[in-house]
Length: 416
Image 1 (tube, rainbow, N blue to C red):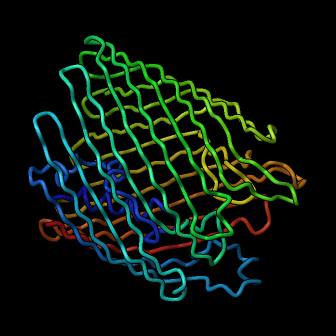
Image 2 (tube, rainbow, N blue to C red; image 1 turned 60 degrees about the vertical axis):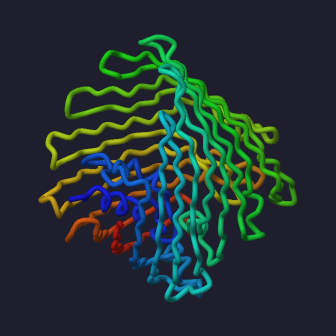
Image 3 (cartoon, rainbow, N blue to C red; image 1 turned 45 degrees about the vertical axis):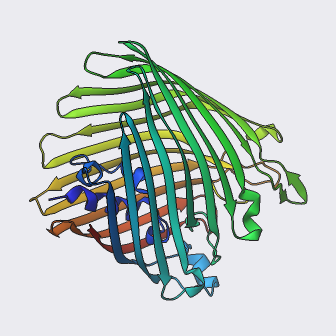
C-alpha cells in the first residue's frame, strides 16, 4: 500500500544514534525514498494529519565505554516511549504553492526521567514561480530537540533550539543553462548553560551554474560560502577561544539518470575553512558526496553513498571533524504490505578542529560502524508499523571514547 511512509519513519528512527529522542521533519524524511515518491505528500487533499506512537530500547543510552561504565553511576540501558503527531497544510494559487507544517512528540525515559522532553519542529514555505524561467522557494523553520549523546556522554538534558531562514532562486537563462542561488541562515542555541559555547549563527550561500540536457540531467559548477559566528567564547586551559570561521567550497555537481533504473547525485570539490583565531585549525582539502540509487524492479532498491565532508562536532574541545564514510542500504518489498530494509555504514572521523591548546600525544581518530535491519508492515491503508533492530560500535585511539550499543525500535503511524 503506502509502504514508503513506513520506510521513512524507520529511517527517522535510525538517523540518530539516540533514536526516538530526536525528531526529523517530514521535509528531511524525503531522503528516505527507496521505492517510490511519497504518495501521501502528493495527494490533493490540502490538510494531512498523522499520529504516531512507539518505543526504543537502548542498551547504552549515553554511549559510554565499558571502562567508563564501570566507574559511573549512570544507568546503562533505558526504554524510551514516544507519542506524537503532525499536520501539513498546502494551498495552491495559480503557479504558487504555500506549505505550513508542524510536528510535536513527547519523549519519556523509563530510567532517566530527567531527560523527558517535548521535541517539535515547524516550517512555513512559499514555493514560487514567475513566468516560465524563474522559480524558487522562501521559508522559515524552527526545531527543538534533545542533543545527541554519541559525542556528549553525560546525563544532561541539553535541549537545542534552532531557527532558520532559507530561500532559493533558479533562472533558466535559456533551454540548456540554469543559474541557481541557495541561501540559509540558522541560529542555534543550547538550553544547557554549560554548553552555550556551542551556540552559533551560521549563514551559507551557494551559487550554481548547471547545464541541463534534453533528458533534464544536469552537470555544473558550484561555489558555496559560509560564515559562522559563536557568540560565547569557550575557555580551554584558561585560554579564551573564538570559534568564528569563514568557509569556501568549490565543486562540480551533477544529477544524472544513468538509465531507466538508476541515477547518480554527486558533488566533488575542494573545501577551505579559515578561523579568525588559532589558524592551526584551518582546513583545506578535497571533499565529496556521491549517491547512487539502483532500482532494477518496483520491489527492490539498492542505495550506495560515499562521502568526505567537514561535519559539526558538538563538543567542547573540537569545533569540527573530517568525516569519511560509506553506506549501503538495500530494500526489498516482498508484498504490497511488507518490506524489508537493511543498512550498513562505516565512517572514519578525524578531529582536525581541535585548537591544540592542550597537548595530546596524537590527534583523536574514531571509527563508527552501524548495522541495521527493519521490517515494515502496512496492515491496512493509512496505518503502518515499523520494527528496527540496530547494532553500533565506535573504536577510538582515545580513552573512554569507544562504545558499543544495541537498540530495538518500534513505531506505529496512522494518517488521516
